[in-house]
Length: 242
Image (cartoon, rainbow, N blue to C red):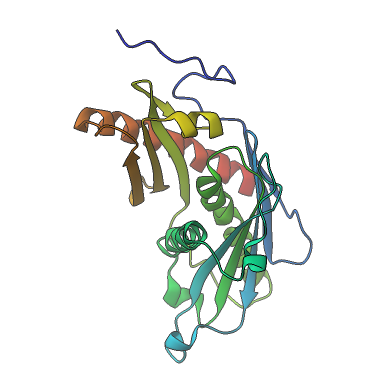
């Protein structure tokens, strides 16, 4: 019989960390939210720009894109800003593309009109799950930015087709765990991230076995945990927006 590992915060294997959405966290962006997932804190802002990338000019379609950054002392030791190194790292590129794809998947770009909504996700404090927290928080910021456009008369109705949230899962000592913190993530045998819409459709699944391959049964258990976790996140997002 597999022994269930004791989690640092005493959570059951299928429990999320405490999650809060603090909307209108800054006063200038059309949408902003501070999302807190346990020890992870990410500031997500959404800025409306009246132009689109060159490859979309004249198409009548809008664009949603994202940038991601981790502040120098978001972790236990200071990391230099990527700008001072003169280039953005591969991990940062991967995460910001993931955030952009996740938000575009639930946005009708034709209905958005020829404008860009730029999402910025800045990690203030990292304790695992920064990319998934960024997606879940960015959705709230995007909703608020679109609400601003509607109030100003620039849009008649919302171009959002659904909600979207993301969560991490993993296998730790043979047991599937939901919403990994840093300690769990760094020792996991398998680490996965799921991006799921409010309707339960998958936008993206990322998964890696650290040592030995995982089974189809393990994958099914992790998938089911992720679905339930994102269902809970969708409810929390809805409550925050109300």
